[in-house]
Image (cartoon, rainbow over the protein chains, first blue to last red):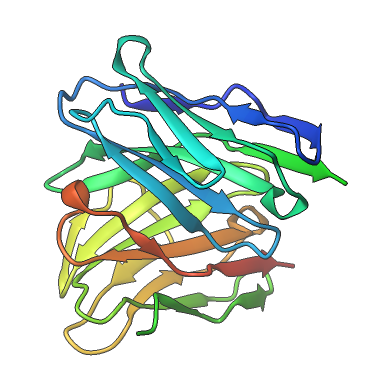
Length: 116
Length: 115
């Protein structure tokens, strides 16, 4: 079964704190892609990162960093020095092989609230 | 360089009416995916289309829902005889090739409210 679990439903921190959003996935595929999306209060989905299963290097982009650990099937997302504008729902997703297609399986999302 | 365009952004329908949701993919993209987001939930895949073809509709309810992506014009997700449980945000995504090697670009969604 293909599945993405984001165990943290809601997280609330004070501005400037670091925060890590967890993502655990299940797949039988040996080749797959993992994604993170941000959904701000306005509702659109903003792409943050794509990582393929062969690349276990951690990635940093400004205050954002991602830790991909194939051994534990996890793809965690850390925001350093959080800001109020980071408040959003964050989704982790896995691309799986469908009927001749690749489609995304999303986790339930983590609602992150950054308090001033 | 317009992104994925969905319209309308908000749609209100009475029970029993039809809802038509439109999605214009990014320029040069021939693959379209529709997802549904129920309140407080993640997105669930509904259907994957290429121009004039439905490739994967495994997530689409068997009744009342249909999708098309004609040779000319936007992709349309059609919901007939809407019920309150159809109230959700419907997102469209497009990609230039199969999703395997690229990310899907999402539209801003259509929020359907059935009253």
